[in-house]
Length: 377
Image (cartoon, rainbow, N blue to C red; front, side):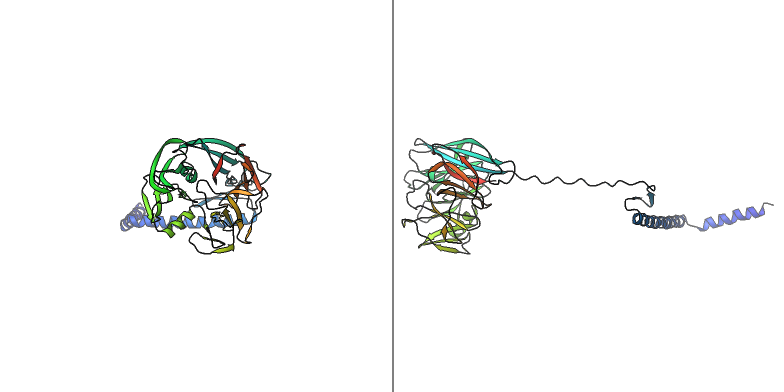
């Protein structure tokens, strides 16, 4: 009576012996994948239907299955947080002044200007200012070299100047020190101190472009840390020195004012003769090449030169300033200017690109502080 059951058990055992366990595993996996594919396809189709019919209803997809939001329940969508509006950078300005104290000292100060509201607009954004006393430069009696050559590095941390040396008229030792004090370090000798742009910092504040007091007219760079002098070809040096302060340079020659790019290309020239026909030099060129400041004369090396005219190269005519006749001007990369005017030496004006007054500062009522450098951040 148990024979049929015994035969069935025997047949199943034989079948099991013929099937490899690996084959069973593979079949199970294939079956599982087929089920998963069908489930995913079904869930995807369902999600498309739901999204097409109810725009705000979401279908959450997890693994191979799906979870449908109950009808009538609105799903909440997580929105990435919005980036805050960019904060407008604070505009700053540093104005460096010097004052001769007796015959052996040069006192340096800085007026720091800031516009917390952002880009200054005439009559809208008033600056906040503070004055800081910087270091005092000590030099030999009646030495004109420091006055002629003092310059602050672009990062505001160091100041360089030339101290006259015995036997040299117009040259001496290059000194570098921290703007706030400390012992000055000698970083070169026989360095020229006369003329315009005689000592110029590189934009990264690591070296200075200088000329040597010798018959060969040697020029090059001095490493601010080691004092190592690296000579350069004059044209390459002139181009690099110009680029350290702006893209253009200018020259007065044979009754013409010519402005070129730093490499000497793209010249723009207009006729120009000083009021009394005296020799003059170009004190600076705006960063767009449009304006050039011309000195009153090229003589007397014992003092810094004053501005005779600011010439507009597009018209060939002097620029008229609403603040009056300017005696000094500093061109800034953004097209703005800093000026001082005749008859009011204690005041400094900051002008925008349209030559409108942005701010004015009364620096010294006595007018015995001289602005020698202006830099905007």
